[in-house]
Image (cartoon, rainbow, N blue to C red; front, side, top):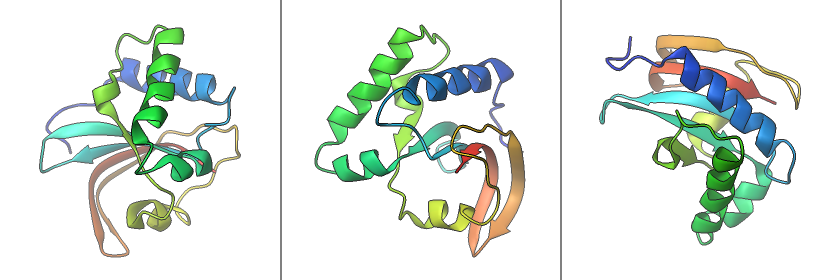
Length: 131
């Protein structure tokens, strides 16, 4: 299990962020809390086809949209530094495609600990959406 615990309030705020993003073109298709063991911290990975178009050249514009959504919902437990935008063709994201499915508006809290999937080791991960 991760050395730094992922607290429930931050997970709930993440769901509120997703709901806010659902109102625009950056509606997430995948949202995952992923523990990066090498830096001992969690990151909220957000994936969306529109975000794919902005990465990497217009990455600041994509992060600005996320920051505005955090501020609009007043999600004080979330920081933009905890967000990681990822392209849908990332090997981790492609690996998760067959693991858990939600509808495009669905939520789940699927937890994986000390798991290897298609050669990718996952220390800790909580999938919130996987459409």
